[in-house]
Image (cartoon, rainbow, N blue to C red; front, side, top):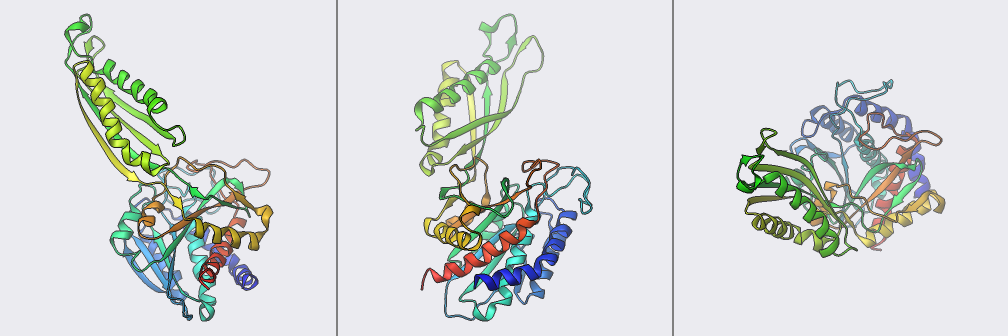
Length: 393
């Protein structure tokens, strides 16, 4: 079956390059993927899939029905939104939309989903079970997966796979991670209310800026002293607002930041832990505070059995030398984790790095991929789907 998948994928290679470049040239921001979703729906329909549009606002779901007796449904999720970044340099197929760019590889992801659907649709007569293709909007704002789930995209799904390109891995290689792949990502807002006064008489005021500094320092120190060092946490304050003049003690400071964690237990306890520290520091110095901890997305925790299936398929397809077992997770976030509340899943890294060239990171205006990776990704996902059904035999 592997040789047949590779042969079909190779026949589609020029078309897949064309698809990727079309999507790259027409990027759309999160929740605004109207042209992209219409284009994807058209390609899926031409392959004979049953297609639902406007799932999760601008998402698309394609259903491929197998002819075998396998009752399970496997989902393959790819995302399709772009970023508010001005692309540089100007490629022949560069963005036509000023200030918007596929700088995170979602054009490649969408192409991989379409390519896998194209290959498996050619093999539908021997397809053991059903495949549901989820083309998700708004991953960059961590909302699209929630929208898709709310609209029923995961109903009846038994397992799900996802993929993300990675420029630090060479093209034609696959990166696999057991357990935690990405971190949970939450938002934090802290408002400290003191009392204003003259800058020359601080003892007559409650200095919100000084207390904010104590809060930040205490939080960072408390992470190293009160949290399990084997369960890493990163808390970063990215914005501070406060004060009106150089000689007036500020009565109010607002801070916003991000909190990243890998371990589910630590993630569950963070809101109360932060609340206690901030309240304690403010009470010590006579200030009041308000802490707003907003859950974002949980950590992507790859299912062990599904990861084993992916690893076996990848090694058979490309050889041991082209499969990396990733030693560390990423503290970046991925709303693929939202689907894992509904079914076990696994996400892998697809190498897109150019040999001998500068490989710019994700979200960089010069980010570009080696298109040889498209074939690697399509074959890996299509063959993994077959290995998934074989695992129940």
